[in-house]
Length: 80
Image (cartoon, rainbow, N blue to C red):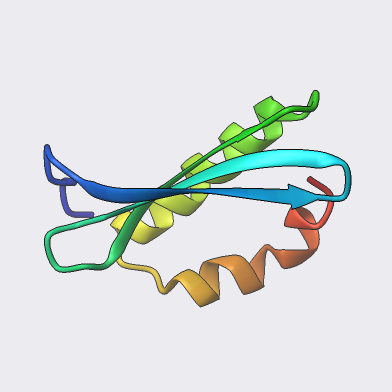
């Protein structure tokens, strides 16, 4: 796993999933690859969301493909 850069470039997106409002921040490394994902929701499942974001970020920092990470855990993420 490579060490993430100390300065990151990112964007925050506001989305709605049903009645839940979410803010998702996606940070990229110097090479433009996604290296981190953070999310905040206005419901009671923030702990699960934090854990999912950490797992995604760790996979991406190890250079896993985002589609592979999301597809493999798609069933679990649908429950969030």
